[in-house]
Length: 156
Image (tube, rainbow, N blue to C red):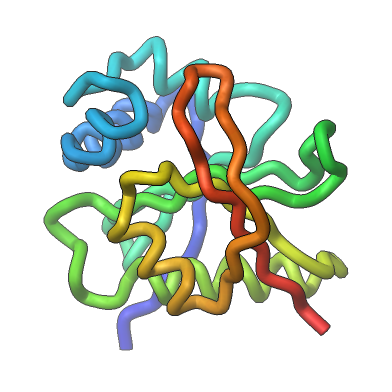
């Protein structure tokens, strides 16, 4: 059986994260207004002291990225900022498996709920997260002016 696991993103493996992110051009356009991100942008996003950034690996193959915040200073809630699967590996259930592993790790750390933000126009993400038990709680406007839907999943 093939096993999904996480591996920390490092400066040396950052180029792999860039390849994964840039394989999702539609998402990049929706989120950032450009089809391709730069290595400098990816470094700022994933190699910082605020978020945890890990690869999703299928055995020895890098297939995705998860970026999360254990406590958002705005609402003191844990936030899953990004879960993205390389376009070549989408449609096989790996996103759901990776989320289940992430959720299990959060439960082991005593987390009671997780929040996510979905760009209003990202219908694919809305469907995915609702199918994983997330419920809409409110909308908000990001600093970049985009409307996001805030969803939450409670563990009790």
